Image (cartoon, rainbow, N blue to C red):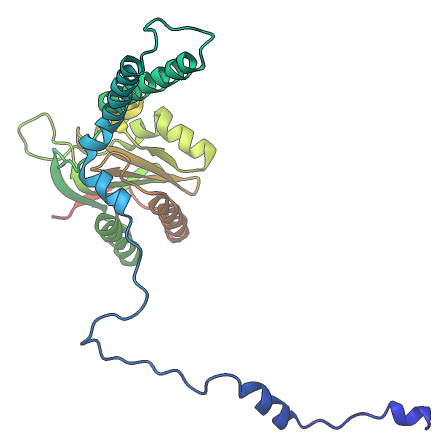
Length: 291
């Protein structure tokens, strides 16, 4: 036999080959849309322990005390009934086991006392103490105003945002939501002093770093005094830089109310506002009340 005959290509029928491979698979999958009988798919697992602990928080926290107390009584009862001398003997294996058990029982009792004394502080939504206002730079183009209003509606609906102030190019171009009430009897909201805000450490720190600053619990930060235009009971604040010319001050009604997803989204909003505001040549100083 010639060597060339061994290297001859073997004719293949692609249709026949694929037809053989596909015969092992089902031709179709029947999916029924009839929901009268209920959901028939895999059901999510239920965490019985987690559900019980969440519903019985006090009992779960005091459970180590009960276990430690019962263990302590069991050791003392066993010591009494077994007839062993009441005085601990270091040479006795029973005495060493009893001492170890007593230590574990006392540790359980102490752990239960710690669990009862340390409780997470409940975080609730706080109603802002102030006046609702809407102030917009009167010389901003309509497309910029529309975008600013979209930003406010999006943040107020999706996040815990209740106040929004935007300072850009040395001017307050937008203030909406709740604001602190003025000390006078005029019944107006406190206006934003852009120059004073820009001189503060909060503004300077955000502009220099170029990154977002999140004050999760505003009451713990001394820089709260630099934001007098926000309601006095504002719980959290996000300072988002808008390029290198401005900043957005976002006040929330809940301590640690802005999630990591909210912070990332606000960063993207700041970049979008910067791209939009750079199209405006020179917003003037005039600020007009709308509503």
